[in-house]
Image (cartoon, rainbow, N blue to C red):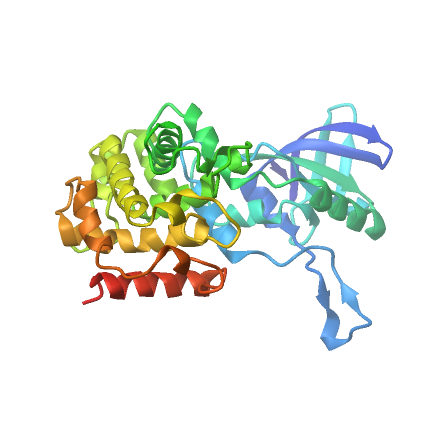
Length: 368
């Protein structure tokens, strides 16, 4: 709450080797008002004057968080870390409350600037944040704490994050794509059998060539342009706002309407049949793992998935499940040999992927 130009909130005092600090809760709108990020920068093009400790804001990350904070289960459970000068903060050990001056640039952000920026203009239900406050902390300790937090934390792999959607009770593009990846990886006879590194790490299977995240990312782009929003709408039960793909949009969002109609098994069957046709056409290049072979790795998979919408609408209609033989008629036209799918012909990376995609598109006649 505010008193005489101050923000007052519950707070506890702690002592650790770094010194004394306080942990409390504060409304997001209040924290946004008083906090600032001291960005690491060169002052007036003078290389001898490098100021600040924070990294530049990632605009894409902030945009993602601004959407996330309005979802039904938004949460920032970890603490925002702040440094405040002693003249701007006072702690009452009797009432266990902290008073901070309500003014701009009072609380320097040591960790959490993207979360705070994501709450700019937030207009949803009350959003409290837990904060860790250091009062009268010198700049050296601020910089060391920031560096330690950001150097020591281990980023969660994207494959693991997707795999955790298995525990979700409601449908979502993420869960559907995880389930399809797991199904195709585990089924005998599947063109992806034991090829996908579930959790993103190799398990010792001899033919693992794709990560779970690599598989899911491309597939999900054919289901949704905004998976976070779709997940939130489904979880809220607001299915009327789950927008179907129009006739023109289906050329890009091939599986959108099938997903909305809960036809996940049929999406999996389309992927199965398409890549079974690939495997039939180039069995060695698709099935055998070797260093020079790119067809069954991320680059080849992505190029083939870019072909899929063209092939799908060449042999079928929206919502149908083309057979392996129907897809096979597309690949029969392509003159590329098993040995052509090599890193010598297609350089690793986006340029090689685009080159392979263009060759597949032209030789199949799908570019016409």
